[in-house]
Length: 142
Image (cartoon, rainbow, N blue to C red):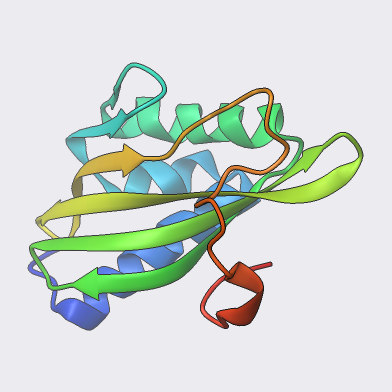
């Protein structure tokens, strides 16, 4: 992808990046990012550079035994956006949701930066907003 993005292009790029993460497709993940991109996270050090980001998500997928990522909500335009997401992971023999949000900056038709907000709590089976009625909200993967 090259050039400037509009809102639909930005959303398509984010959804394609999530699909590539879900497939464990290192090259496609890396191709979603600018060469000097960075992913900042509340739980670990930043991943920097498109190739390193591709490798990082392959390791996350493997660590969580075939995790899949899903965009639940998306708002934004061709320069910046935010999304709520669900990552479905295997834990204790069951598939459970881990939920969070990301803020994106785009450049040259790719993702330049992501700022991820979520909490990894090894003691919690599910990671999501407390008492939010996910089951009653069709936007969210359950």
